[in-house]
Image 1 (tube, helix red, strand yellow):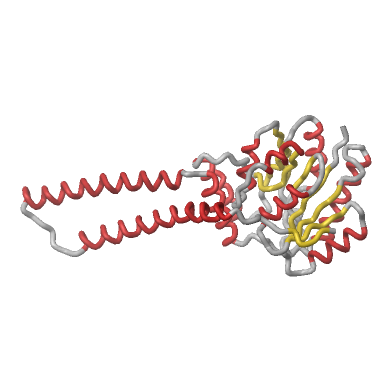
Image 2 (image 1 turned 180 degrees about the vertical axis):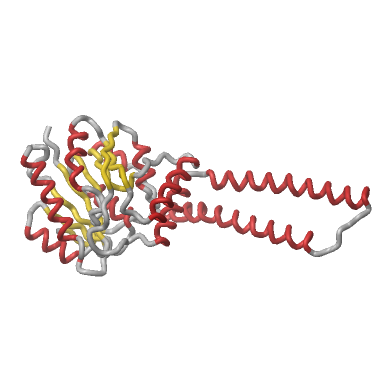
Length: 312
């Protein structure tokens, strides 16, 4: 059965790269349509996540030039994951592929994704085989993050970001996940169904600058950990037990020194250091608990994840 394919591209200030991205993706659609792998009404959907440059006007121009190009404009910037969700839950199609606009993900492997879906895979992950174009810092921190998430019990696909194909059945299952704080890399593996992977080498950004500076990367990493793992809370409990044991041992030692050895070491360090140490542990623990409470607070409000302002 020929698949009606939709390619979803979240965009935030991507005016420099958008024309080339559109050209390459149209080539992919043309190639797949030529071999009857996808239907004639398969299309590209750009999601403008509140861009401040000419991104939306470019999308509108591209849509006028080719009927296979469409655009969705969000009312304001809501973040990469919300932009992805707006496309996934709005766009029609038998199979939906999400890919970033920066062309770091290889668009040519979309052919293999479509073939894997035709063979029965409901979800097809694009997995980075090589990250040589990343900086040493980014490559090593990414690997450390994947390792940390695995240790915390979060089921992530190693070296996979948000380049994936999802069939209609998987999309409808995703619709049932109603979290306000979305972390798709952790949610999609929870869906199940038959999966496949295609591997590719990650390229350098074609143009423009990264929309994920260090601050946003750290925020995104924290979002993933606190959305899918309660291990930090359990570590606080373990830390409390260890400190209690150490404190009890210290009490025994002080009583022994005072009553048996009759030698009390004078000085403020023995008093002040434990106070500062325990105070720091308490503040850290409150901060971790606060992250989880904040998530509960946001989830209970049930605010919409995005609002669509216009479509073309």
